[in-house]
Length: 361
Image (cartoon, rainbow, N blue to C red; front, side, top):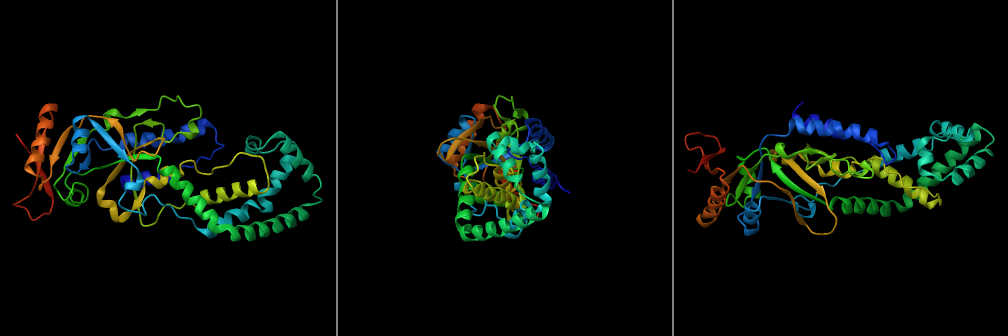
């Protein structure tokens, strides 16, 4: 299993809901953060086109991030849901096996902890009174079966609206993240072609290891942390043949809708608080050649691009087709900063398509 597969297994298996205790959340974040700090490459590369704004960012030691709205793959960061899984989840929620223990606990005056977090005491008292009128377990099962049929019939009639609400909600959250995309490689001809204006741009080398820090824990509620409790937040992209499965998150949205429809005064429940980050880090495997790591930060407002980090590049690499006047700019900035400057070139005595950096004295 390669490095990214290890991270995928860890990230996708990390679940904490909106009711979990902070210590549970922090324990899981410690595992993710420890993995990232142990596996992040010593060098990561940012490809840039030869534009004045990119020269200025280089001069000012700024690493900028953009919105997913500027990404070149419209399917990127877009999850999917499996209706069969959602129906099974709803059926389970209305099953006697799930409800009977809860009914018994409420009847005994000791409701589940998540109920006391979500519901007011008055509502719990009314619920206890309602439960007292259920004659037998057979009646409970019958009532649950009828309720399940009614719920499914109702949901089928509004599924289009629910789908729009779900995906628009995810999109609203995702576009608040600003993301800087970096690569493990500075010698990918495809990367130079796609992200450095057909080799007319440049590439900068960064050492992110030296600037990673643990979160100071100044938030009032760390469960709502959006950065793995680290600054800056960075993680490898996970390449997959299928988009991220958000079925469980869709199911929890449906349960919140049912709760509101029934007039239950309770907080919304969110099954997977890492949903947006998981979708932001999942990408089609056709892009695996990029070997991408993403630096990200959640921002307020609608500005599409913002500086995420002040960090000096360790080296600069000039594209094979860069114009002479742009080469002069890059070399001048490197000289001012006292960092090496390289010219990318083919290996003339080698059949490989790989390009290599040659130091400019």
